[in-house]
Image (tube, rainbow over all chains, first blue to last red):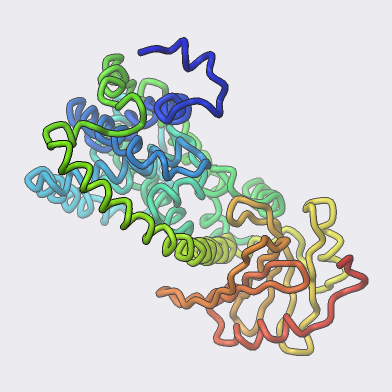
Amino acid sequence: MDTSQAAIAPPYRMNTRARFEAEVMRHLGAAYNLARWLARNDQDAEDVTQEAALRAFRYFEGFRGGDARVWLLTIVRNTFYSMRAGASQDRLLDDFDEVLQGRADEDTPDPEVLLLRAADAQQVRAALQALPAEYREILVLREFEECSYKEIAAITQLKIGTVMSRLARARQRLAVAVAGAETSS
Amino acid sequence: MNCTEARLLLHAYLDNELDAARSLELAGHLDACAECMARYRNLEALQHALRAPELQHRAPAALAARIAAQLPHDGIRRTSFRRRSWPALSAALAALLLVAVAIAGWQAWQSRAHQADTLAMEAVSDHQRSLLAAHLIDVRSSDQHTVKPWFDGRLDFSPQVKDLRAQGFELIGGRLDVLGGRRVAALVYKRHLHMINVFEWPADADAAAINSQGSDGYRVIGWAQGGMRFLAVSDSSDLDTFTRDFRSAPMLAAEPR
């Protein structure tokens, strides 16, 4: 790769690839983190990130400024769901997971008042990993990527109101799961 | 503020998504209510635990290199053409060019409609958010002479605030909002139990009129008048009447035109 030329060329002469690397590839870390939390294993996360980056490059001509990070995260998320839909067996397993998870939480009276001790990272990781994808992604976007509600709404194509209620629900379920792990350990 | 209201707003407070007035109100409630305070501390602890750096996954160093190796150098993806013969390819390109020219014209026309759609959807989102946070209002007043000056200094334009009490629409207040990436004035009116948000900003060149009915019961009506662009959003069946009344109501004071 000839980086010296890109460094010398004034911005308006930069080719698409150089612009892509300057604007989009620097968010690869965020893209991988989201993909890894969605896919839940290294290999799939790398596949999703790579496919998303290539898709992003293909759409890059149509990208009219704005926040490149939000744009890339949107593509990562869509790529994950379309790849997961392709691998139907995985999806079945995942859905089954989520049904069980949903039942387990229903009979907890008021999860918000459960006392959270300083939970260790292992417990939080395990609890987050076990949440359904829709809750996992919203927590990752909010807490790790520090996206605003508006950005989350753009990435997930949800309404702001839905973002707010889903985030509240995700936190409740995570709190229940972490508190449960604490009492059983 | 009561506990039910406070519980709704705790998350937005934690995430710094509340306006100053509501934040102050909620902070006041938290000081007085131990139970809500405990809830809030819990949420804070959870957020803190989640933000531990060891929970972040770091991309393997080889990944960036692997992706870079697959990106074409000049912005055109050639890989899929490699096995085709050149005459077939140039014929295909010529045909493609014809289609592209035809599409370009249609798209230019289409993109204006699309922009209007996005704007309408975003306006509905803003409207819903304002309702959720218990009427996100920065300046609460039914007096247009209070609301209008409040905006001055906060915006680079002077919004039109109209008194429609005689027509049955009560002005509740105003706030700043963001629509299509720019700061806009949002006026909140009320009739019976229905809220109406009116967004206002200086008109751009190609302000398309909007009248769309969302699947979720919200209607959006957009128009341009006196150099300003307006979007009214509500689930009220009186939105047509409101829009007509708003447009025909006299402007307040001397408006630089």
